[in-house]
Length: 124
Figure 1: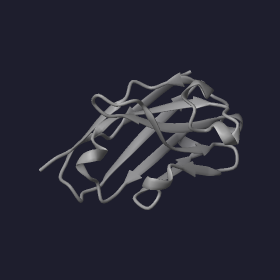
Figure 2 (figure 1 turned 60 degrees about the horizontal axis):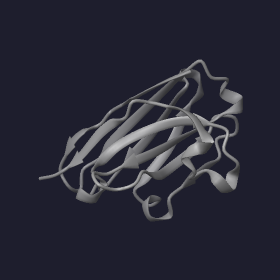
Figure 3 (figure 1 turned 90 degrees about the horizontal axis):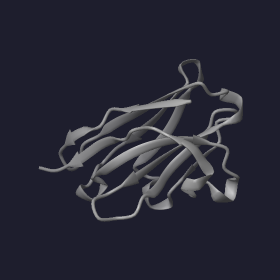
Figure 4 (figure 1 turned 135 degrees about the horizontal axis):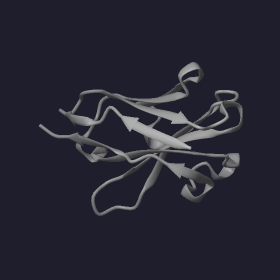
């Protein structure tokens, strides 16, 4: 299994970015892909996840009005659309694949494979 995350970069406050995560070696109808982020000096936190089988999604409540996750099963790709970005969104964003139970979607140990991360910097 391999995950390739991309789409990070430097953006001004209030701007938008769309991250992509392409998975290879997975069976789409049996896994969930999650996005996590880790800011400098902080612990990694869950952002959102989506089931590739039924498209059900979960999101961190505080980010749900600005971030949206989606999928393209034909491309084995999951997207994270991030709008109204703030400096505190600056972090390395990682995608991961696993089979988390619903109540544990935020738990990083529920994800077996991780991508290399893509850096998002929100700054003027």
